[in-house]
Amino acid sequence: MSDTSWVITVTYSVLTIIGVGIGLMVFRSTRVGFRVNTAGRRTLEKREGYWGIAVVAFLVVVLGGTILQVPYWADKGKEKVAQTVNVVGRQYAWTVDPPRVRVDQKTRFEVQAADVNHGLGLYGPDNVLIKQVNISPGVTQEFIVTFDKPGEYKLLCLEFCGVDHHLMQNKLEVTR
Ligand code: CUA
Image (cartoon, rainbow, N blue to C red; front, side, top):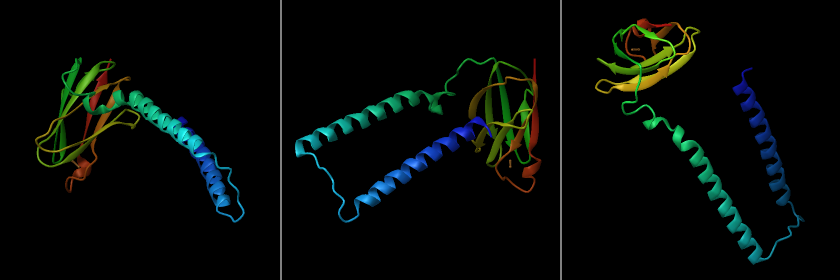
């Protein structure tokens, strides 16, 4: 199993155990004869206040830690790149210009659809999906990739676009 699946498995197991525990506690509390030691009104209000502060603090930390990773503006603007590849999808082929780029250099992709909607899937030499964008006519999709190994990368169509959708393949050579 990969690292990610281990993390998911362990996290999910722990959460399940916690969830079952909470469920049992709630179940027990509904039984006749269950006693609860209730604090005074003032103490409860104070506790509630602390919980409120804790929740807001947690949300602020999560927001602060993740907001910069939101992709919406990451690829936008004209970030300086070493090379640009123009890709046009049409029934049933990809035009890739230029067909060869250099490894370890920031590469901007500008992807367009000439006729109908297509989905560009960019695959590495090991057939691992690197990037996927859906494209509609009239809109240019941009993204930046830095290829870390040379080889033959593949472009496949990932959105059904007609009878010969499966033939929509091309390649991009990444060289030293
Ligand atoms: Cu283009 Cu499927």
